[in-house]
Every structure is written in structure tokens, then in C-alpha cells.
Length: 560
Ligand code: FAD
Image: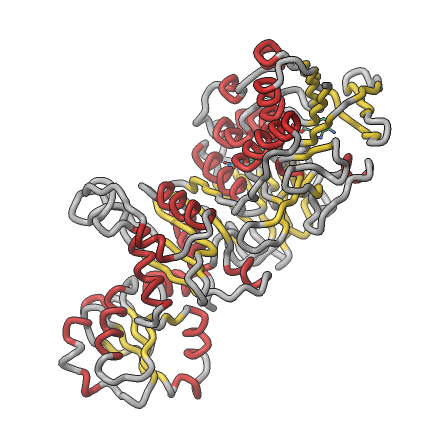
């Protein structure tokens, strides 16, 4: 059997290695158009930032070591430029010599990855503007960064996704002053707005110039500097620009070779990772696959799924499609300065796009028992189904222990679990690690209270629409349930202060004909107060979701 593999990094190299482990006698040829194979794309920002000091540590294998270990013929600088699926052959161009030749296959695997989006705007080809995908991109950025050592340096990051923010942190660490320009009203779109604003605040605290709701309309280049001209007429001068506005599946070869492209713009594959041509398989960033929760196809640009698909693909190549890929729920995590930021499953934006009804909860627990030193704040947002509590999506922003909570939530979503599973999960607990009520259980308890109508959450945007409408506002009475001191330090305009521990004494004063909106710092005291009022005859009582913490951050970065 002769296997050809296109693309020599996450999906391609993993497929080749697995193939060899289960089929010692086949011929395997791996084509990679770049100079390197099997390198750590995810480590590239950290090498630029000098966190990873040795360039050599980025390479998990070299073409020679990979070839020796797996008996795979690795051909670098070799671009596959055409696939003839009828005669089962590919045309390859050796990029150094320009020489073209053909190679026949029994089975072919595509793992060409995704390419950074580079819109055709004026000045985009300036040598000071970089995208980050490969080792060569990394070397170019690193060279420029090192040449600017000891000078005052300005870096512009266009696009505040995961890679953009990782680059912001790493360049900041090297002494660059950072401006982030983002067209959306928030950073990191897998997060919902109430979670993204925590990141906004952290970036501000790190002295990052964060520009939201504003795109770049053009660039101009002068004296080794670039000016980014913004849509609102402002301009920002920088010594380098990292363009990280997203990626798109690299489907050129697949498309020109007649393979089916799906609705999301990726290479179409079936559950066995077979393309529309049965002897051609595809894996990684370039494919689209139905989301297990929404059922809607999407391209998932993550290393974990690419590796999983590669293993399944290799097994299917040898063992005739015995395995099925289940799809990815796009569990992603990033370090953003001192924060750990993660999301899994569907965001509110995804849910609205798929017309899936949902409820949400926000909790702000601490990473471990508050009485044990060093507990760190954490925020968890759940999106779940009103009908049965099925967990649809979850987001975690924190530091210590945020990653393990995200992974737990991801497991529950992957298994089709509900918010009740969060309550039932057993956690390891000792004060330095967690609380007897782990943050994940706590999030489950709150969601259960919402689902079973023990509490009626009010979302920040609902409150906004009430506060901005005088007539509507008259129907509501708003109570800050925090202490007098907290109230005096800042509250939501128009609220009265009835601290939760005294609310029973003042109950006669609260107008029972009005709808009541309660809030506290993070939601717990508001919840307790709402239970008191609901059991004392008040008909309509809301508790502000995420409390004053979430609302005040939204007020700082979103609410005008
Ligand atoms: P790639 O790993 O990109 O490999 C595709 C290869 O195919 C490329 O080397 C390309 O040169 C080659 N190729 C393309 N066309 C041809 C052709 N016609 N002929 C020959 N060769 C070809 N994911 C995470 O989960 N976590 C992270 O922290 C994370 N950080 C990242 C940071 C950066 C800077 C980048 C760029 C990506 C990051 N990712 C991360 C994404 C992750 O690296 C990808 O999801 C993963 O590498 C996808 O694997 P792939 O095989 O599909 O594509």
C-alpha cells in the first residue's frame, strides 16, 4: 500500500506516525511545502517572547529524525499542486528547483491547515506587517524584534483573538508598548460579552491600549514604521504590526482538484474523515465537521482535534473505516497575561445563530477556599437549555485552577451532559485546591436554581433596556443588597440599599406592587434576598446575573 500525506505538521505528521505504527510494510511519503515538519505552532508566540529560549525546542522532529524513526520519506519544500483523483496521482513542485513531478497513491491524506486572513487593504504588504503561522514567519518577527532591542517600541496588534492576545503579551514582555485594534466590541469572540469584559479590564490594567469597535481601513509605511489608519479617522504609529484577524481553511488544492467543499468553507469529510473521493482523506484545520451540540458544520482551528482526527484517519486507512470522528466542541484556552481564559461549546452568539434557546448563569467563585491564603478570583459562565438543563456552552476566566474547571465542563458537554451533572460530579478537595463546593458544582447549583425557578435572573442588557426607558423604569424597584459601605462606594444609579441581613426588617417599605430587581456584588446575596422576598408574597423578583461585578465592568467597556 502506498500512502501520500500532504502537510507535515499537526495533522499530517501525526497521521504518518500512526500509520507507520499500525502498518510497518506500507510506503509513506510526506510532502511539506515549508522548510520544517512537526513543529510546535502553538509555541511560536512564546519563542518570540523569549519564554521559550531555544529555537530548537520548537521542533518535535526534524525531517531526518522523523524519517529514521518512522521510516517515512519526508519531502520538504515540496508543494503538492494538483491531485488527479481518477488516476490517483498528485503533481508535486519542488520549491527550490521549480522541478515538477508526479507521484501515484493508493490512499491520500490532506492536512494543509489554515492560512491567516490578509484583507486586500492599502499598505497591507508593508515589510513591517506580519502574520504568524510558520517558523519562517516567526524568524522574521523575531529578527525585527531583536533589532529594536533597547529602543522605544510600539507594536500594533490587529485582531484580538487568541493568537493576537498571546502576541500582545509576549511583545509586551519584551518591552513593547502595545495597541490592540479590534473591530468587534470585544476581544476573543468565543467568550460572551460579560466574560470578555474581564479580559478588557485586565488588558487595561497592563497598560495595553485597547481599541474596540474600530477596524483598520489602510496602512501606510514610512521610515521603517507603519501607520494604521482606523475607520474612525484616528491613526496609530507602530514599529511592527501583527495581523491576527483570523484564519481560513487552506482549501485551494482541494477545490481545484474537485473535492467537495462544505457550507462552512472547509473540505467536506464524512464521519470516517473521507472526502468526497473515497481514497482521499482529510484532517485538521482545513476540514469542516458538524458541531456535536449544534449539528452545524464549522472549521475548528485547534491542535487537539487535528491530532485526534489524524489518529482516527490513520486507523481508518488501514482498517477500512472502523472508526468514526465525533466532532469537536472547540474547547480553547489561552494565557492572557495573568489570566487564564477558556471557552468550550457554544457561545451566546453561536446559540442565537443556530436559533437554539438557552438560559445563562454567571458565578464568581474563588479558585480555592477563601480562608486558605492565595485564593484567586474566577468567573464561570454557563449556557444551558431551558427544556432540560443540557449544558450547551461554558466559559471560564481566572487564573489558578481555571484550566481544570474548563476541562471538566468540556467533558460534560462532550458527553451530552446537563447542569445536573455538574452538581453530581465528584471533586478532589482540600483547601489549597478547591472548596467543598467546587466552582463547577457552584455553577451547577446556580444554574439549577435558575432552571427550577428558585431565582429569576436579569441579564445586564435587560436591565439596560429598563434603565434607559423612563416609562418602563417606573414599574421596577431596584435594591442593592450589599452593605451600606459597599453601597456608598458605588452602586447602580437609582437603587435603594437594603442589606441582605436586614431585608426582613424593611420588607414593609418595599413596594409590593412593583417588580423588584435585586443585586449584590456577585449574585449570592441577591439570590438569598430574592428567596426571602419571593416567599414573602412578592410576585416578580429578579436577581442581576453576575451582580455588580459583571455589571460595572460592562458599564466600563460596553454600556454607553
Ligand atoms: P498545520 O499544523 O498548519 O499544518 C499544515 C501544513 O501543511 C503546513 O506546514 C503547510 O505548509 C503544509 N501545506 C499546506 N498546503 C500544502 C501543499 N499543497 N503541499 C505541501 N504542504 C502543504 N491550537 C491550539 O489548540 N492551542 C494553541 O495554543 C494554539 N496556538 C497556536 C498558535 C499559533 C501561532 C498558530 C499558528 C496556531 C495555533 N494553534 C493552536 C492552532 C494549531 O496549531 C492548528 O490547529 C494545528 O496546527 C492544525 O493542524 P493542521 O495539520 O491542520 O495544520
